[in-house]
Image (cartoon, rainbow, N blue to C red; front, side, top):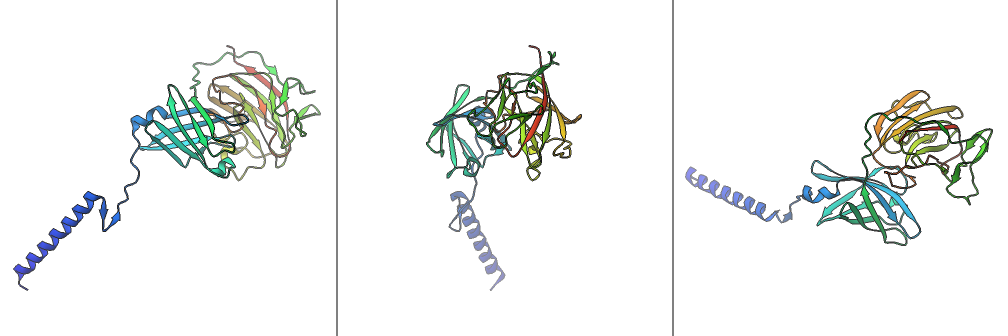
Length: 335
């Protein structure tokens, strides 16, 4: 074959290759196989009304459940985390916003349900509302309002300390289930949790405060101090395998204690907790383990999701074994 003929043939082959490539690019296929383009990035304008933190209320057939949701854009992609009826804040596997509607999925494993829970909702003014399929007896409805900033300026002036436990009986407290066979007891001047029983809720409500509490966590026991009835400061001797925010002194699922102090089952310890707005400081046994950090939202077990309102101190009694409490003293901020 002459050099001229060889050059002509090579040019023809090159032309064919370029033509096929361009045609495949234009049609979205190459060699008959669909091209993988992935989902388009969400429209930031369309997503904007849904972004941020939301205090949710899930309305079932028997009762209402507090919940919490955060939606954000990360590098142009939607991401979300949620606190459901119990447990800790967790990332959601799927969230989409399209045509003025948000949809997200809470996995069945998290909901103790035979099927995934699928939430669909829309913005109505300053609120969210929608339905959820998946719960037994559903569909349920749900609603949400923007979580308040709770931004406080300056240093509060403190009022007089108030003893919440008299060391004698349950005066000033109530159990979440008055018909429970497992009950809180007062023994030798201490409150003792029942283990797998009701929560113990103080009858007073407070907004900003300093709280002193002494606790004695038994071996393999678990409890917690809920401030405003919405945010749990954890007490435990059985969660070493769980994330650090689930350990003693952590704000459950959100803030890990740092440093984390050694467990001392059977020994008396102290918490001094200061809560101003969303900012919390936790001092354990005289050591600061959380230093003025923001609590993003309610933790699992919250009494409600009305973060703008005062709430009670409550002690968790629904977890394992026994934890004792004494010297529970609160110093509220002056209005």
